[in-house]
Amino acid sequence: MLVDDFWYDLPSAAIAQEAIEPRDSSRLLDTSTMRDLTFGELPSLLRAGDLLVVNETKVRAARLVGTRETGGRTEVLLTRRVDRERWQALIRPAKKVVAGSTITIGPIAVTLLSDPRDGIATVSLKTSGHTEEAIDEHGIIPLPPYFHGQLGNPDRYQTMFATTVGSSAAPTAALHFTPTLMAELEALGVRTARVDLEVGLDTFRPMDRGAHGTGTIEDHQMHTEHVRVPPETVDAVALARSGGHRVVAVGTTVVRSLESAATAGGIIAPFVGSTDLFITPGYRPQVVDALITNFHAPSTTLLVLIATLLGPRWRDVYQYALDSGYRFLSFGDAMYIEVAR
Image 1 (cartoon, rainbow, N blue to C red):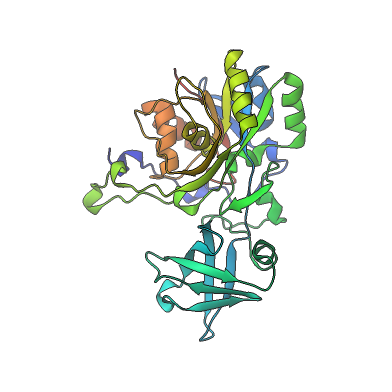
Image 2 (image 1 turned 120 degrees about the horizontal axis):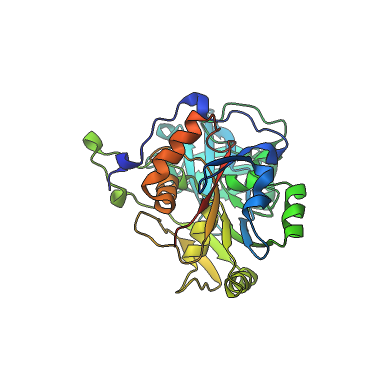
C-alpha cells in the first residue's frame, strides 16, 4: 500500500496549541455512532467487567542543551536507552559533530560513539552521580515539535498513570484521564491494568513518500521500542475474556504492547523485550476489543494502525472530526473505536 494512501490535509489551525482544563473536558468522538461526547462521558461507552489498559510510562527530561568543545550550542535528544552505557540520540545541529565529539550539559558529558546518520547517533553519558537523576535535573521535557503553545506546568505532558521513566514522548490518549473520571469508572465496575511501552520518536515520524509518491508502507522500517506486559495484566486480560468482557486499550502504544504479547485466541503471556510490530491493514487484533486514541498526523504509522481498525471509513471519521472542529494531535481531542470481529 502506498504511503500516500494514508495522507490527508491537516490544517495547522486544527492542531491543538493548548492543554485544556480539566483534562476530561476534551471532546470524545464515538466512531461507532458518530456521537459527539466529552471525555468525561467515557463511562457511557464502557460496561462493568470491561478492562481498561493504560501505559504507565513517564516522559524522560530527554532534551539536553549544551555546548561542544568549540563552544557552539548543541541539542541532544535522548530517544532510547540501548544499554547501561549507550543511548540513541537525535543531535541538532548534526553537521557540527562527528564520532568522538563531546557535548557538555552541566555535569553531564555526552560523547558521540558514531557519526550522526539522519541526525541520529549512538552516544554515551558520563556524570559524577546517578545518570537518570542528572538527566532529570538538567534536561527538559521534550514537547512535540508541532506544539507552539505554553504549558504552565511541564507535568501537563505526563499522564496520571506515569510511574516508570523511559519515554521520549507521552502516550497522549491517557492525558485525558483524571482521578475523578477513574473513580467513576471504578464505581461502574471497569477494571484497570497496566503495561509499559517506552515511546520513541520513530513512532511519530512520517513515513517516506518516496520519489513521485511511490513509497509504500512495506518499505517503512519500524524501529524497536521496549515493552513490559506484567503477569498481573495477563491475569486481568484472562479474567475479562472469561467473563465475555472487553479489553479497551488506552492509546496505540497499549495496542502494540498487548498484541506483541499475544499468542492465540486472545491469550497473552507475560512479555518483556523489544517490539517492532507494525499493525497494517489485514492485521486482525488478537487481544484488543476497543481503542481510545487521539487524532494522528498524516502518513504516520499511528494513522496506519487506526486505518487498520476502522477500515476505509477512517477517512470519513477524520473528515467529520475536521469539519466539526475537533482538536488534533497530542493535546487534542480523542475518539473511541470498537474493533470489528
